[in-house]
Length: 239
Image (cartoon, rainbow, N blue to C red; front, top):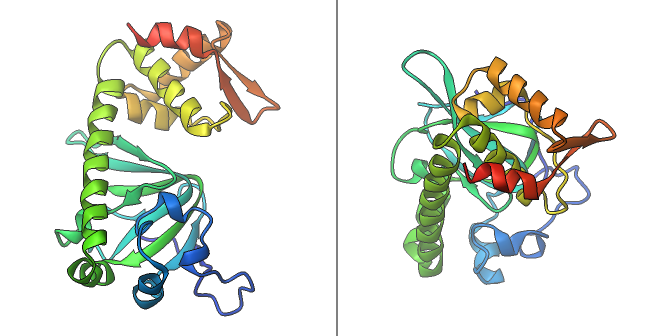
């Protein structure tokens, strides 16, 4: 179920910082980025800015797809249950990505979307987007581009994290987090999440991370941000 503790900000009448989409700090990177201000004012009033705490669900697999979410900050993982009952992380989404696109062409979500750390999103109903798609050609083009980006990301996830040795896959995962962080420092996921992304057990993920630390390929700063030896990890990733 959707986390009941998430806070809607933009549509909260008591929030003094209520903002318009036209002045959004990350508008250039998100869905509807190219729409003129008059169209934003006309169509996007139903958009709400929501905050999800770490590990809370944006939506659940199989549930009715009522909303799409554009990530303003943070990271979201898409989980899928395997036939043996284990959970596999099939994709990672970050700032600028749209979560739940499948809801536009079907009645339910294909995955469970979970916040990795605190996540800030803009939520818009699928009904509103369908209406916009009929009336705004620019939006249709953007939606098609988002679909393609989603496919490219899924392909990249499979190639990077599902092929090669477990050591190479872990190196690629850490390099991905390092690249997304901008300054190189990032909050490392839990061992269970690492295992679910790489298709290994939690115990194996723990052993590999311990070995990477012993070798000096990764290190923590102040017990929070993790930094990588990108040159060494790049060599490992080529395995």
